[in-house]
Every structure is written in structure tokens, then in C-alpha cells.
Length: 320
Image 1 (cartoon, rainbow, N blue to C red):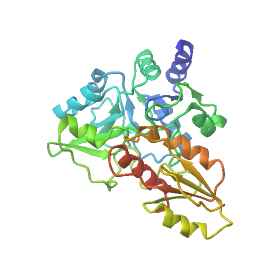
Image 2: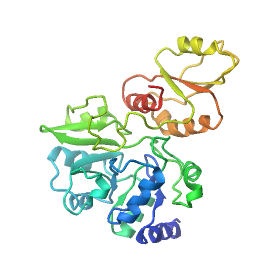
Image 3: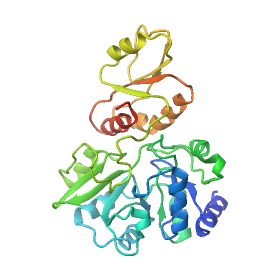
Image 4: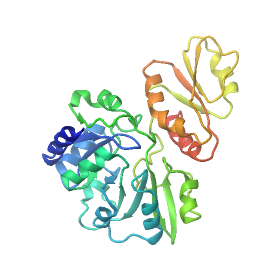
């Protein structure tokens, strides 16, 4: 069904250009990892610091093995359990991985995406793809082809349209330190899911001082509209509602009575594990951002499961 589109995307990649690819997490801006020209174009299009490394996408565990020096057994266990899926493993790279992909870090982040189109594309190309999220640096990650087109239409970036992303949050990044799995970035794979497979893991709950993993800058995933993340939405509403000249978007997972006239309520579609919110998070923020509100007031989620990841993204999108 998508054979012709895959061949078009392959043609761009083989000719050292970039394409936007679908994954289950977010859309990525992809290039052949062995083409310095194409990788530098990613950084240029995204206006991304070259010290910020890119995640490498592979089609198999075997392709991952060819890029690294060694894989600890617990990491193998996680890969076997969650690949293809929203898990990125951070491992010491071997000499086959160019430094322009890793920001000169000795580590490389690798994952196998759970999307048939992109897996077919990688197999067709025969080389791994470097692919950060397909958005300008620090902006909302795209979870639809239309969002990518909004960001890069003027740059004529070819988009391999795979429909809306099923997870809607970036991958969880894990590594191995002091004989234990360490989580560097929360993502679509919850801490609880990881610990259920390998036992207790290390997670510090704050950005590392050295940004050798992707997506770890404190200010990230941000709409143009100022975001205020709050544990007490009603009190925050009272504070902001005093200025009746402001148009306020209110995002909550429970109804609110007596909402001020200058406020508009947006209710999340929820289930007990927050998967529906995660899947729609970026698309919702993107849509509301285009309505030109003066501020978004967002109710903080419970610090469990994917609620912890959602809070992480909203906190880094918010006023610091």
C-alpha cells in the first residue's frame, strides 16, 4: 500500500537528504547516520545545538549489535521484551558510529521503532537512521504528519505519512551504570513497566548535568503560549482569572464549575493508565497553541505510570 512512498523516502535518504518518518512515539526527522551532510541538515532544519545527540533507529537487535562495543545482559532483556517499541538504549558506541551523530559523546542511543512503514524503510535502505523529533528545537513534538508539515513546509521536507502516532510520547531512554539499569529520560514506556522486567532501576528525576542523552534540556516541548502547570488548578484559576483581559485555556481531567467567562475548558480523554492523554498530549497542546490564548493553565497529573512522564513534559514546557 505504501510501497511507492517508501521508495521515494529511500531515494531522498540515499541521496544524502532528510525525510520525516512515522514512529509509534513521535514523527522523526531522519537521515543516513553515515552521511555527515544529511545529519548536519537535520541540525540546521531543527536549529538544534550540535552538542545534542541524535537517536539511531534500527530494524533489529542484530543491527544494534553492529553499532556498539557490548550490551549488558539486563539491557538485552529489555530489548528482547520491548523492541520494537518506545525504548532507547544508551550504550558505548564502536568506531562505526560517526561522532556527528552522537555530539562527540562516546555513547549512542539506539532504538527499534514499532512502526511498520519505518521498519520497512530502514530495511530497504540497509543503513540505520538518525532521527530526532521532527520539530524545531524545544518546540512541541509532532504526532501527526500535518504537524510536521506545519513546521517544515517551506523547507519542502518529504513526510512519510504513517497516520497519528499511537503512543504520542518520546521513547524512554535507559543505560547501565554500576551494574544497574538507569533511566535517563522518562517516556512512553513507564518506570513500572521496566521494573516489572528487570527489577529496581536508578532514576534521579532531574536532568543530568552532562547532556549526553537526547531530549534532556530543561526547556523543551514548549508551545508558544505560556504554560502554567499546577497541582491546585482552582487556586491558580482564581489568581489568573483576576485579569479579565486575558484569554485563558484550562486543561483538566475533571470538570470545573463556575469557570470565569474569559476561560475555556479542555477536558482530557482519560483512562486509568493515562494512555489516551499521552497519545493526544502534543496534538492537543499544538491545537490549543494555534488558538492564540494568553496562557494555558494545566492540572498536574498523578505521579504514577505515564502520569509521571506527562508531568515531566508539561513541566519542561512550562514557565520556569
